[in-house]
Image 1 (cartoon, rainbow, N blue to C red):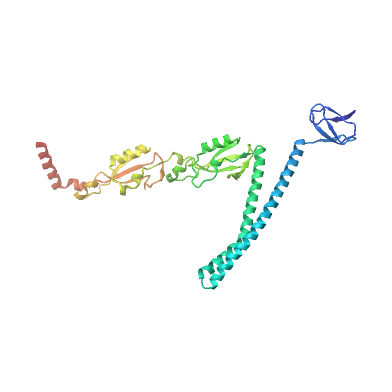
Image 2: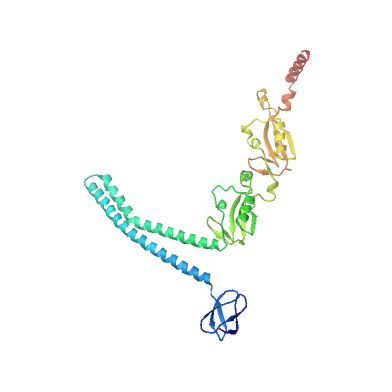
Length: 341
């Protein structure tokens, strides 16, 4: 065997000894098996032994799948023949019984005929569905073997989504994704949506929403879209629900002021309505009538600025009621009597 000038191993660049008696030559330095296609032009390509072996294995597997499919088809044909015999017998018996006067059996024969008519197409559809799922699973597994990542099941869409954005980002990074970006949707409008704050809406990978069993390359662009308020609304606060439903609660003015300040409002004032005229209304004295913020009655779940102009309007007797001469005299006498005791 002699060295042929110019022919070198594509893997280690060592000179190859080639005498022209065979199309194949093995590199003595790295062991690569090389096929020489033209000695004069010195053109060659490397034989991928692993690929050849995979191709042979895949062919054997495919032949086994075909044999198994043929055997299953034969079993199905046999089962279908028995099915037709049994189905035909049931239909005939029910039909005869129906003709003899049993109306229920006649309807049973009708439904049996319908089931028998559609049974084969339904089974064929189910088989195609199973075959499609099997093909998809094989393709999915092949991608995973090549380094693709299976989308985490914990992040698959749920009707009542409860995963927050930070947790989702951690799950995706732990799965192997390297380019994960949180995206704030800024879509929340009022306090009733507070429980959705920070919760993910969708996970978008390479521009498409990700679903269960999807696979993606590790460097895919991953967007974790989550709910939140706009930058302005994120600083706003809600009025305590009891102050939005005053018709259901009796709240004193000091208590209302304390509740509003505890919620975060910084500009709270009280307004005396002077609307009580009869002694029978005494139980309403000093209780809150309504809360007004920036000139409007408060509403449940509405968000308001912390520095908004908050007015606590409360009930009290009119000046005329307090200045009534008879009442003034009676109060003076009552005070003297109490002072003696």
